[in-house]
Length: 236
Image (spheres, helix red, strand yellow):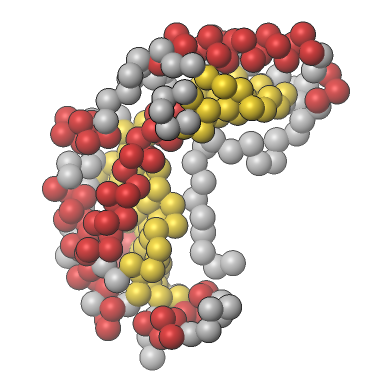
């Protein structure tokens, strides 16, 4: 598959587990610690759905569950003890809130095929939570222009008759107007012919260009995108 799906740092893929060493008592303690951690950090009830214990060398626990916040936001907590727990709640909360709005902007500014991935959260995932208790809306944070937060988005767009650069520039200008700072925007440009191709056709055959645009949305020059461009194949 030619498209790169960027995954947030909240995955347990590839973790070596040894469930045989986890007693019921230990599992109960980990569960209680995770529930208490979320209660103290965000004043929210947390329902544990899965506990995975890392290998004997790391001793890291991975606790999956959801927050009783009216949205049942899925969360992953990781760490060896409650003192060094890290959680994905802010990323999930803000990203879920932002996705519909961002998809609307992408559809308005570009010939969008799909939004592959989006996360918005702390630049340093291991930093202590800056926002605790009831999390502020993502749009409140954007008004503040919080530079400790960053946007990561992956988009697939059509070449739009050769107007993809202008489309991407419009999208970047919208990010600037929304007051984003640190951004990583990956855009895959596909031939317009894919629209009429059979549904089971490999979209990778129609991939023309990839743009990896990173930096401060306030200073990126939308009219000068060549430094971020990688040509996969020439347009016919």
